[in-house]
Length: 163
Length: 188
Image (tube, rainbow over all chains, first blue to last red; front, side):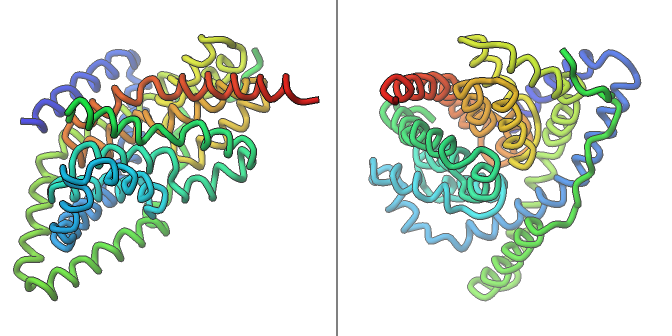
């Protein structure tokens, strides 16, 4: 059911985009761009999906439930925040791990804290791109200000039983 | 406003290598996981798990296709040069809002986003708008949400995360302005 709603929403967005593109040449350019993007993305998506399903089989369900389940409280959010930056690889790795952990009993609050922490603080992004381009001072300022965000997101989900 | 002379929206984006280091790592991790599942539960279970994932992908594909199309169309609708010129000109709340939205909408990985943020800063955007741009991209990137996040997580969880993170780029930008102002006042 979830997939159906998501698909319908995305198709509506795609239709709106198609309408906004207006001219046949820009529509053709968008289709070409989508094909190039698909050539890059689909092999990764296929591999990541299969990898995630296999990793879910290997994850220790008991420990996931103990560390990130409903009983773990704030400790789960702190641990999820710490795991975000050290996750290697791209977006698919962090989302796949979050999905696998959810399946095994992690709370939505812990999963969203982890994904948010990865988005903001992934060490790969910080060291390879932010530090060289933005400089240490600007990066330190951003990190200091953003530090509470994953915990705030997870804390709100937990406190109001969202998700 | 003197934007780049070749603002040709028909020029295709630079083609990325389909097989790169990241993909090889992903492939290696998947193969290792397959080997470990085979060792633990037998080859039949590993194969069934992989086939189950493939079935799930088949259900997802229409959604992914639509997401890819929208992601590819955004740069045609919002040329980067125009957007970055706008952010440099604006200040105040409008500057922060615009920078946050640009971060969320402009596609591209960290290799495109951080150089652009540095360029915005150099071109006259203030520290608040620059950090709002980086945070908007980090937390709300439409491209990543459409293609990756919605493939793995339920749409209501994705919507919840987006709703909770929506004010974050603005808050980071405002905090950055307040902190640098105080530092300047306290400094020599």
